[in-house]
Length: 173
Image (cartoon, rainbow, N blue to C red):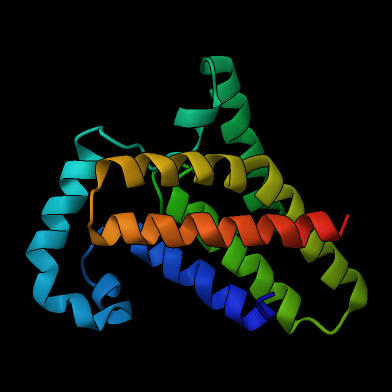
């Protein structure tokens, strides 16, 4: 089982891994700087061409009503914790991963036991209702389309990590 600090770092790493490979991406993955063009080409091919959507509700919602409801629910989580996302949609994978990073950060930093419980409960609910079901489908889609690329490896790592997180949250019901 990972520590809170290790989980915090893993969520941040995954959020950056599924963002466009420029600027801060290479601050986080400096060893990949020489592969910038290849990574950008792969990102465009996999995610911008429509092969794989990085939006959870593209996999979870069966119709526009469900999509709108899901977007409102995710936005409600963000609003409850005064979080504004840079992503174009609240269900963007990197935004959801960043939100989990933020919740864990708040949980680790607070001294108030009630706030710790609020943060952990929000993590569990957000993870189970949004991130895990969508992240699992996104990871499987990436693995099937990205071949042996950085993104296939990141998706595989994310899938393993999400399964471990699911065990953590199911133990703490």
